[in-house]
Image (cartoon, rainbow, N blue to C red; front, top):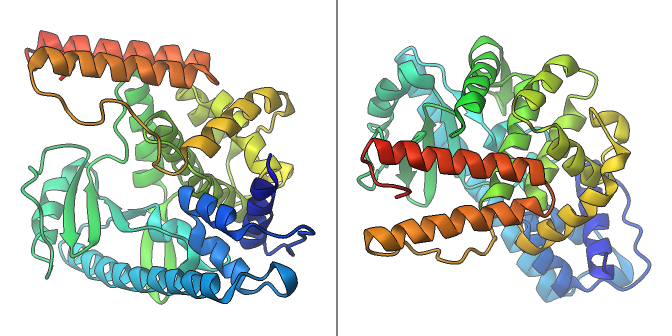
Length: 371
């Protein structure tokens, strides 16, 4: 770990847990803030930086830039909250109760909710209410859809200027058939059978069960690690949820869900880093395993390189021509395999076989092999 990385994590731990900042050497603010932007939590660190005194205080110019980012994030959250309240009230008038995923549900668990960065609203409504919900929410003032079909994927997108809302029929796309069955049961239990009603600044919203909040926050981070890159912002979310729900979780149920989705080893490996880098207490991390230290060191290198949605991918633009597209997709599948195999070889083979099997099944339906 470099000195800049050490300073970055010291500031991040202070932001997450209210710990005092103890940094003896001069902070390289350019490197630290670049790292924070790369991992999607520059606003969180800016708050800590603005309260520092002495030699480690940022320059007036840097401090002004940080404060502008903090104000911008707060303004975005205020706009998103107005959209959320309007959407939930409208759906309730049509007897549809949406479940808020991520976003505000996570932000309210932070010491200062206004510092958690996010730019959209995710509402889970389920399969039966999906089409009615889309129809209803299209009538919201200012909403716009860029021509996407309602049945195009796991969610339908509406935009309000530069603010986005995703209406989810399912919370995640799971390609593997057996894992899809397991995930469907997990989703039903955590988003339908057992939910929570919480207060969002005087407005009541529904969020997932505590176990599903923990599971889904990690599963979402894992998905981005597999595809676009995961940053410390997303891992901070997992740590914050675990800290907020300490002593309140059904650990037997959480273990069952993680094992059903073959995620126990990734959970323990990411968990080691959350303890070592983010300062989460071992007692607050279920199934902590110190033996994952060596694997976690490899994972640390990938996280620091890739960052929050920053993973570089060759052939990022879709090629023309059927055979070129097939070749591009094959390259992506095997590139993902070797990327994942560096740390999690078992999961890498599972993902590889699942992707190939899914492509072959699409081909038998004459929908284009791997296209």
